[in-house]
Length: 277
Length: 300
Image 1 (cartoon, chains in turn orange, blue):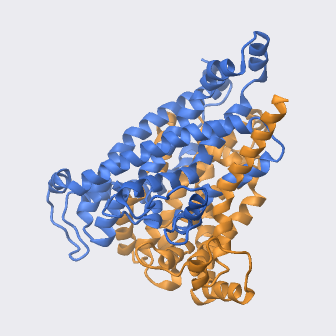
Image 2 (tube, helix red, strand yellow):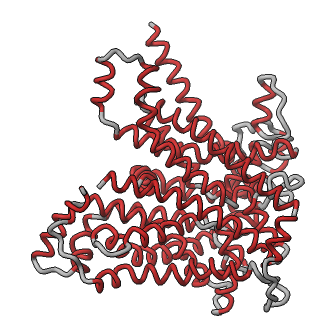
């Protein structure tokens, strides 16, 4: 009897946890379907929606305020930066996982410690550098620092995954006369695909969310990324239209939400691999 | 010893391979991470501002000003309060969640999926979301509290509560991180330890305090240090949630450096502010990586 009661309490707790975790998103979704005046009048918001209003809010945000354009900018910057970062980081992770050389641990720690660099400490110098080489207010001006920001993270995650692949596999390929780089390219990369996906996801999410450097580098509205665009629409300094702000929030959250459903097992893998290593 | 054994029989590799594999990464980080970091140190010794692009060498003047600046100390205290409060709550809640999810209730995988979501969000959006939830006039949290007869505090409007609210939101967003790490460790613990303890007649409470928690401690410590570093350097949440106010009550060191640099365009002073953070972080990171290396050696 008491066991059954315990079970009941446990399920009740589970529901509470789910609500605390998820209700904020639902609330934002509700607000995004209201008129400005309805948000003030309906507390809590009722479930009676005028679909014209919903359509108007989303059209306002996606088209008029340009969130679609911001999203495309972000996709471009995230895609290129993540790819470049992988190309540079995977060989480095491979060297740390497989090769033995003097100072390997020191090199690894130094590279990984950049993962903890405070963004405010490098934002100004990066902005000045980018300006000096004439790339301010351009995609390359964002991509160059973003690659550097994600490298340590990707190296870290990839070392973990490569360590799990048995060394005997490399040895067999080396005996067959492959060079080190060939072993990496032909043998390990296919085996490490889940790791590469995890690393790419984490790098991509980090870049998608990056804000401070974008704030410095990008001036023109056309080039703004999603985070920057969202921030200028909803920044905390000035009064805002809450229906529009909520819609901006939903439009920014939904891609990440959909993405996370597909890749849930990889995400858990990535957080624990990236962290517990 | 163990490690040396594993390596026996491997060829020692020519350093050409190392250079080829590692070189691009090292060069890139040197150019776009290390150089900016050193550049920032240099700027911190000048009075560089956006107006004049040269900036005169002022030695340690920025740092001296900083130590005399009440706003700097205010931000340092805010940061310390925020980081310590947020991380300790996250550690307790995250560990409790991990133990709870270890019951493997039906449907808990779905809730676990939900809990991952906050971590992936842009802090800017998290800020907007919570400003809506906590809105004093029509926010649903106040409505819910009033329904059950609780007077809601002035979440983001009072100097007393604003920093608590920032902590609350940070806890909402990042408790899942501690949870996932501790949970992963919990799943990896060998079952037979618990079975043996049960045979020996250990009660559930005894098992928890004498076996489970000590075994989880490395993972908990790791998650705590990791979170502390990230909370310390975080900037976007304050930007999105409270913009440092009211009356600077939520201005953290990151936010102060941002304001000095971006808003007031006083680059030299901003660089000095952020360099105090860099030094603190170098100390913390050294501590963390010492732990990681121990773990890596264990794993090998």
